[in-house]
Length: 306
Ligand code: B12
Ligand code: SF4
Ligand code: SF4
Image: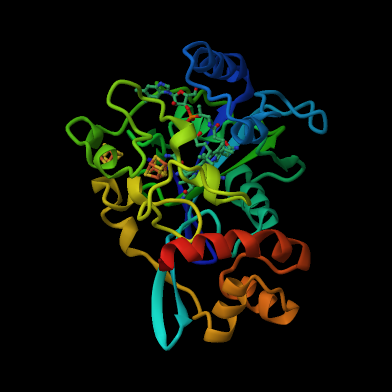
């Protein structure tokens, strides 16, 4: 049984894994690379470029990693335009959880370590799905997303190094969900064919979020109607039987007014309106983020409204 905690009404599950397993974890990635399954796509390589299973310089005595899975539900938001209301899904992890990394770190100290005098340091420069699965916290779905019992796949993973010695050895096989054995729903619903029958690792270059969570033009091969979320993509999780309950926990965000929707689509930036949109979408609260994300939202909203 995985201990469960609640933080700001969100369910959190955790496991710990010893840094003694770093070499094996690194070998998992090297094997994936050798098998030709680690895409050379520039954006993907930028994301994982500094990933390494290693003890951080700032905490050389680290003994364990605490892996947290925190529910991060789907959200929906109404965009008003020309007298009509358009309901759009907004998937995690793009809208803020409402729980800070500091609060999670404090929970680790208070509820998991439970003894004073130990250090806790957040670090995400590692392949954290792999950590979650190897620690026994979750399993891979056929869609390559990590599922945690009771939470489904709509969750975010956070990892914290600590010098506390838990004195347990959690190390699990790379396991796939039992539900995947006779199921092809995610495979059938992926609009780009990123999930294949032959290869467990998805074709990352075909995965929509790789393009729609950042600025830039969509590739020529993107067909109309493939988009399902204001950012990211939910198709391979939406109809998954292992998400039956999780998919119902959908958050209603504040409506985006006509004036705000028009500002986005016109490509204008009026600071107060833009910050109001960022606050409603739980996405950005400073001008630097606004400048980056408004063009992303404009491009994505245009195809979703089309
Ligand atoms: C790069 C990245 C992306 C890229 C590439 C996606 C990918 N599949 O790698 C893009 C931009 C496309 C992306 C998309 C999404 N992402 Co992302 N992403 C990341 C990031 C930064 C690194 C992921 C990574 O390491 N990829 C490398 C691959 C090779 O790792 P892997 O999938 O674990 O591969 C292992 C398995 O394939 C296994 N394996 C190999 N063969 C076999 C065979 C069997 C049978 C089994 C069981 C296993 C197995 O071995 C591999 C490791 O060696 C992480 C954050 C982080 N720091 O880790 C977030 C992260 C993985 N993303 C996350 C999310 C939420 C998403 C999206 C759902 C967002 C959205 N709504 O659109 C989608 C899901 C797309 C998908 N189907 O995977 C969450 C995942 C939460 C969860 N429940 O798992 C993370 C952990 C961020 C977070 N803080 O929570 N993402
Ligand atoms: S849709 Fe089916 S095959 Fe895909 S992850 Fe869910 S249970 Fe597994
Ligand atoms: S996130 Fe979308 S594009 Fe990527 S594998 Fe899932 S359904 Fe396919």
